[in-house]
Structures are given as structure tokens and as C-alpha cells.
Image (cartoon, rainbow, N blue to C red; front, side):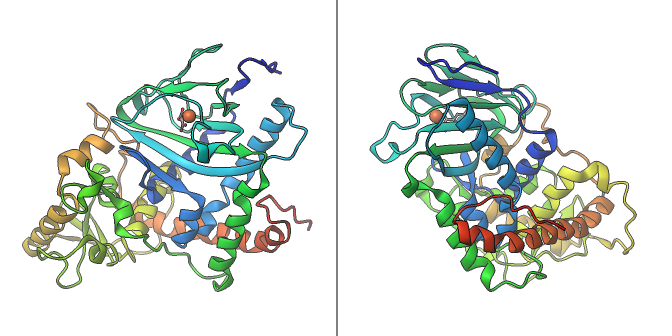
Length: 395
Ligand SMILES: O=C(O)CCC(=O)C(=O)O
Ligand SMILES: [Fe+2]
């Protein structure tokens, strides 16, 4: 057991999260992220998942939050109750960095007592740059590797920085803990979950609902409002090798706006082939594609019982896709710079088979409905205790 060093109280734990936990959180982030609070940063918060009809995706966080909280309390010898102030997935793309700071360095951040950063992907493999440094004490630097966790006090005993990301996308699960119960995020989350799940049938399929379109719009000048830039959902599919087709009328005339396009059902295109499956919106397509990326090796071996219907694109459809891209990926080069890993341009999921995608549609529905049942069963207990925790049910 590592000793608590009083001058610089901090702990690094290797392989705290399993490979599959990291992959599941990566799937959640890449299919739900929004443009973040600083340049070249993307984030997925629990309240955002709830707001977009994906409350069930809160479930995979629950055991991880519990294990992290136990570890923080044990290592820092807390003799008081701790509350989770914030839980979020945060990714940094090329150009993102942060200079020396402590995590409580603003008047509105004074409630933060402990910081926990879980690395979900790896330096040198998934991204370049992005080393973490402590200003004083040991270790001086941390090379982020998937599954590793660093925890430290949020005060100026632990001034730290992160080097600029020079390539790829660096992904973390970040939590802040507070002694002040008025900053407990659980109470707020329980109330959001109650509103969202109360009117939902436990057997309903949870199809994602989009947040406002500006949350998905990336541009170098965030104030420019739908001028030069790109839609991150479309860009993520594009760098994985997919195009998106919208068959509904008037979809790509020059004045259609991003908001309108976002709400439309979409079909997936690969090269010259169009899959005959309509997704309710771009987020639904993104969920299935990233689910396929996560589970490809398992899904490729599955027998697909339904016919896979793929058609060749007509000239008209090709033209339409070009029109859509000119609106949603209008700064194509920026999208590639932000999301592609150079020079190999590999993006973690190079495999592709329509069979795998079709299998992923059904497997994603099973996954979502299993988690949805679980969250519906847990919520009454969470409401009683105003806390998110793993409820043990005895047979
Ligand atoms: O991602 C990291 O390694 C640390 C990020 C950080 O310092 C922060 O978000 O305050
Ligand atoms: Fe920090």
C-alpha cells in the first residue's frame, strides 16, 4: 500500500480499470460527446446522458464511481463523508493543453477537495503529447495508459499541467470530490433521472434524442455560430469511413440549417453502398457504429438471421450526400485534423462489414434494454437515499 505523503498527497494506481471498462466508457463518450468548455475539448456528463434520453448509460459509471470513492477515502484517510461533485468523460484533441494549476483555483471551485483522473486510452498508441506533470514532488510526470488512475488533493499541494496533444484524442474519466454536501451531484442526478424515467416504460427502447445543435458544432471560433466548422457527430462517422444519407425532402438545399438536419432519420453509406436501415437520427447511427467498434470481434462471428439489404447509390443520392457534407462538414480539413490520428489515419476501428453493423443494431438494442431495466429497478432506492449506488438484489 502506497504511503500518504503529506507535502504532496497523491496516488497513482496502475490497471485500476479493466480494458473492457475503458472500452465501454470510450464507446459512451464517442457516441454522446458534445463540444466542451475549452478549445479542442469534448465532454460527456451524466446530466447530458440523461437529457438525451440515454439515462441507461449512467449504469456503467456506478460501480466505477463507488470503487474510486472507496479508494479516495481509504488512501487520504477521510474521517468525514465525501460527495462526488462531478463525473464526466473528457477528451482532448490536437491543440488542447493546460498550464500549471490546482483544481480548486477559482472562487467557484473552492469546494473541490480531491481530483481523480482515470486514463481510458494510451499515450503513444491513441494520442501523442498529453503527458501529465506535477510541479513538485514525485512522480514528476505521468504517461497516461489505459486503466491507470491518478488521484490527488485539489489544492496547491498538487499543482499540475498537461502537455499539448499533438495527435489523436486523449480520453479520461474525471471526478472531483467534495466534503460539502451541497455540491453533491447525486441529488441533482436523482432528480433528473426521476423526471426522465418516470414517464418511460421499462420495456421501451431508448432511442437517443439530440441536444441543441450548437452543442455538436465545432469551429475554431466558437462564437462564429454555424459558419466555418463541422458537426462532430457527422465528423466522427466520416473519419471512421462512413457517409450519411438523409432521404427526406428538402434536406440539403442551401438554407437548411444544422438543427433541422440533425433531427432527421439517416441511413449509413460506405463507399458506393447504402444500407437499407433507417436510424431515427444521427446519434442513433453513431451509437450503433461505435457499439460495433467496441464489440466487432464478437459481432463478426454472429450469425445474422435477417437479410442484409445494401443498394448501390444513384447519381441523385451521391449528389445529395455531397450537398449534406457541404453543410455539416464544411470545414472538412479541420474535422480530419481534430479526429484523425496521423499519419496512419487509423481510428481504432478499421474493421468494417455490413454484416457486423446489422448485428450491432440488434446487439445495441439488447445492451440498452438490459441497462434500462437495471436503472429502472435501482432508481427507487436511489430516490430514497438521494445517492447513486449499486443496489444488491437477493434472489
Ligand atoms: O487529464 C489530465 O490528466 C488532467 C486534467 C486536468 O488537469 C484538469 O482537468 O484539471
Ligand atoms: Fe487539473
